[in-house]
Image 1 (spheres, protein in one colour):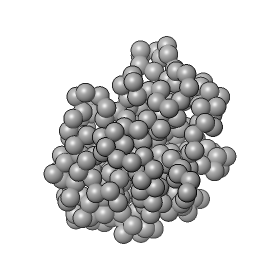
Image 2 (tube, protein in one colour):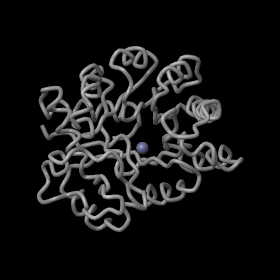
Image 3 (cartoon, helix red, strand yellow):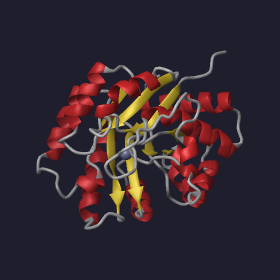
Image 4 (cartoon, protein in one colour):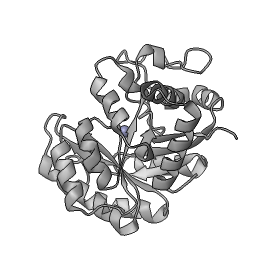
Length: 276
Ligand SMILES: [Zn+2]
């Protein structure tokens, strides 16, 4: 039996920070048994780039959504624009949506309104929704409990809530994803959450070009140095091929069998996002 392909449940391949490196990224990705990737837009301005990528690359499942960091600057007709993109892509995911009380000048009531509107569309079409959450786990649980929410389930990406809350989110239909970023020493709680995730709700992601993992996890299973040096802010972007490192990290944290984890994640990804 061949091992299942790798699936990236949450990334931003269309991000301009990756554009100058496109050729190298493609060469590195070609060395991986990559299945599908969910590419998340964050505001109406980047949805066309996500759409273009989905139209040209069969690996890409597009996701269109309004990120909590973008809520204050969104044009008044963002929801109508979102509906247009969803109509064009019947199999698209909604995301990245969510709540964030970590960002400066956050407006939680406005974020909740935007989240509610996107959850309502997800429920209406029974589409998966990819959710970001920072320092707002109580309000997130409340919003999902009170609905609306899609019958097929929802995705808490880069899960950073408490391990104890996992059961409550899972009972509402939650899936949880992690990246090799959790191998940073200070991320012990995230590693505990990964261990607390029900096996049938586990997903893996890169969030590339964000969430760069610590150095030993940046080159895993790939020849040569993968990440790019000389980024303007000193931190290189997270390479999409590091999805292999996310799998290696999960295997190490769970002390599990790599082939079993691959087939479990493949099954979970397909059940939630609807494509294999
Ligand atoms: Zn993201």
